[in-house]
Image (tube, rainbow, N blue to C red; front, side, top):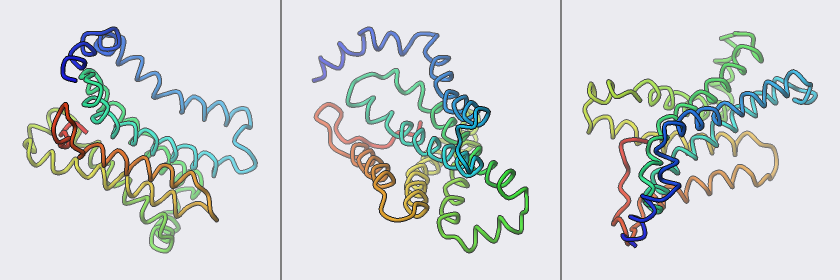
Length: 217
């Protein structure tokens, strides 16, 4: 297994991941959902309730990208592609970007910056309470994602703080489950993916021993 991973680390995929074009390509991919939502908005593709649909779409992309960010470390260990770690921070920041867009559309467009109404929703609607909790966590993680913040906080405290990404992921899934009406399976698919990623993160691997969480979440 170790020999196979060593060969993978020198293969064409590894070379592509380490190329100077890889990060710009991932950045461009991260902007595609935004471009798609803008196109839908301009073309009338957001349906009869465009604001509600924009809120929904941005929230879904935030959750999707958060799960992708959480998948990087297990994939890196299982495949031996160390170059995947280069994109973890960027993907995580894109997850925060779409979460910020999600909250901004809700506060600015749906509620017209009526802070009293927003606060009332947070207090009285449990799914919004949970969702705002996830957003607060993601905000803290984004604000401390720089190398400078790692040095200021110290590696141990930084690692402890960034383990909260799992709490944010769980809160995001709970927010989605509570939001939908009636029995719908997609929220539970996201929750199952999160549980699978957590299990992979901590499972024993013949190649790498215990998959301990990395501080570069």
